Image 1 (cartoon, one colour):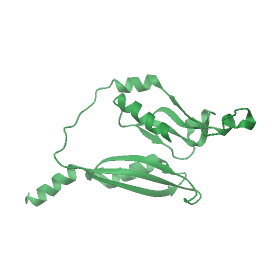
Image 2 (cartoon, rainbow, N blue to C red):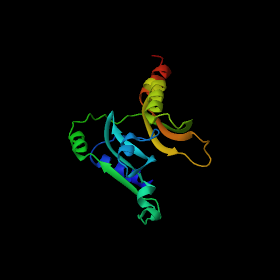
Image 3 (cartoon, one colour):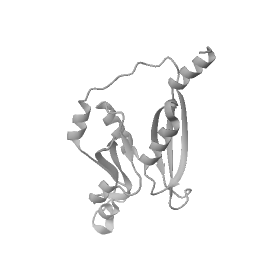
Image 4 (cartoon, rainbow, N blue to C red):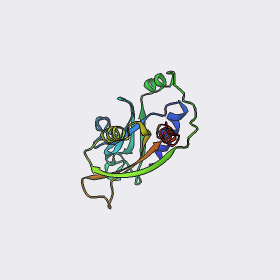
Length: 174
């Protein structure tokens, strides 16, 4: 869905890089806002704060038989601009660039549809410990190739600095 890329570029232009999309099951925000398809929408979050929702517009609105007259999928986003701009004004902590290259790995996991993405992220961060620098969800897929009641989550894992510094200490006998 191209709207994810547009949202990502918008948030990054505000200096908000730690946002994530919660697509775990039925979106509570999407359910409240009848415009969105309940299973094809995601809440946009930073930490516990919901900054909005994006996703496919419900077929009840776009369906020609319901008077909508739109035959292709339509996407939309609703954003809480007050929270967005308040967060964008916060002071940020900048890290110096690491002298050590990052090790990046993409993995995909198959989980039950009712498992929330935040649960998987928490588990990955706990398992990665000090070695894991960053985890980003970049794809959620529920299609023909995926068993019913399951979804495929694709993550990018970044291992950096901490692991490489430990290896350097081991190499140097410290």
